[in-house]
Length: 251
Image (cartoon, rainbow, N blue to C red; front, side):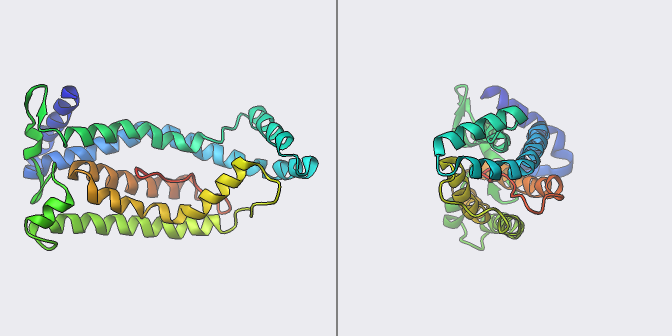
């Protein structure tokens, strides 16, 4: 973790002439962007996988008719079809999974009072008036909702709400035409259909994350969620009838 702390401090030093007291916060935003750039090839692969799964839908419908209510045979045939076409049903989860270590590193870094036996100097950095190691509850206890630190959180909540509303409208538009679960379909397909119903609301869970994690981790979440919204709008722009992969808290 010491190496990661030095990386954040080095980025903050580089950005200090532009962002002054908020240089560490800017460094976290830049770090998040670098992580998302590294993960972008996986996001593109997930989009290609979604297109491939959408193209397979007619053949999946034929398999359902062929095997009727025999779920075991249908699941086996479905797995064989995915293997034959080299399509992974889990490809859409990979971008979120690969981001989680970075998020937890930030969370741990700004939740620890010491690093390598020495005082954690990063906790002294702020985003305007809000300490990067603080939480929304701390801001409410020092100045209230409209205090200097509270206003920083209101700004973050406003960004998250705007992104969540954008995702809600877009996801609702894409999932509304998704196939309705049929009797006798595979348990995996039924589970995915259930998840699809919740997808339009998933982005709003980010508000809870921002409220309870250290501000540094919240900045990562907000930046990543905004990146995801733009990225999915671009990657899935020509797929009006296919839902984008389910978004986790890191979206």
